[in-house]
Length: 252
Ligand SMILES: NC(=O)C1=CN([C@@H]2O[C@H](COP(=O)(O)OP(=O)(O)OC[C@H]3O[C@@H](n4cnc5c(N)ncnc54)[C@H](OP(=O)(O)O)[C@@H]3O)[C@@H](O)[C@H]2O)C=CC1
Ligand SMILES: CC(=O)[C@H](N)C(=O)O
Image 1 (cartoon, protein in one colour):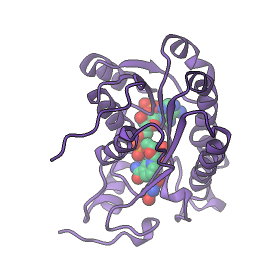
Image 2: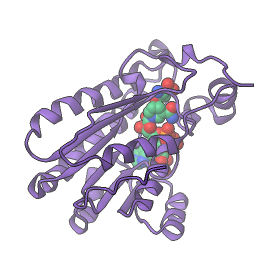
Image 3: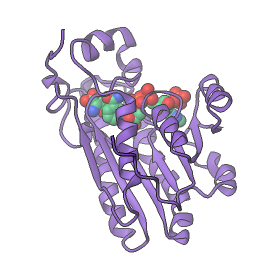
Image 4: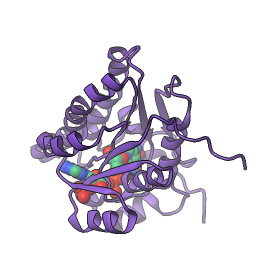
């Protein structure tokens, strides 16, 4: 196996939201292993404490909807790599049956919070002439998925935002990458359907994408020479074409 390329030398510090589980946690560990100082953001105190004590990363206990929660850490650390990962799928009900409160929850956490955090981090990146913004979008933001009208809209918003932001950042040296996965085996569906049901309905019977696979994709984009901007990475398990409906058993 050829040795993995080093990260661009100007990248020293990364901030990852939604760091307490799933894709975010895998990204934190991969970036830490690649030699970056990592700031891990999440709400679960216990998971953050474990990350801080056992994995040697800086932790910030915050809800991403509280934009002012980041001022202190951003004044201490110049963030070179921002990973907007925190997200929820708080309901997978058909839109006509959905609790209206879930509309705000998903749009606030999945769409508005990443925009506000990016707005805080970007001026420093532009001033320094380098930086890499990652957004964890979703296949549900690229094509309709059943029960995901609101979730998918939040991710479609992220996808378009990435393209528009790249226009605004032309010549700044700041890269923008959307990673839009199909189904990854995490706790994302725990609120909408419970983990047991998610296991048997969504994850059993075929080989899943794991959070570590997404972290490796992110690292691959980060390792490229700084003038190379991977705009979008769309990735599915081989058992999924688009949406949950096309999942087929390929194993067992
Ligand atoms: N799993 C999948 O199939 C796919 C997931 N994605 C996206 O990947 C991202 C990560 O999800 P995934 O790892 O799957 O799911 P998990 O539920 O395992 O992780 C979600 C993370 O987001 C954090 N989070 C949620 N709400 C907030 C909030 N208000 N403030 C701060 N942190 C928050 C959670 O931490 P805490 O509860 O401690 O706050 C948790 O660490 C999401 O954006 C999701 O939409 C995209 C495509 C596919
Ligand atoms: C919930 C998601 O974002 C995902 N792409 C899926 O197909 O389940």
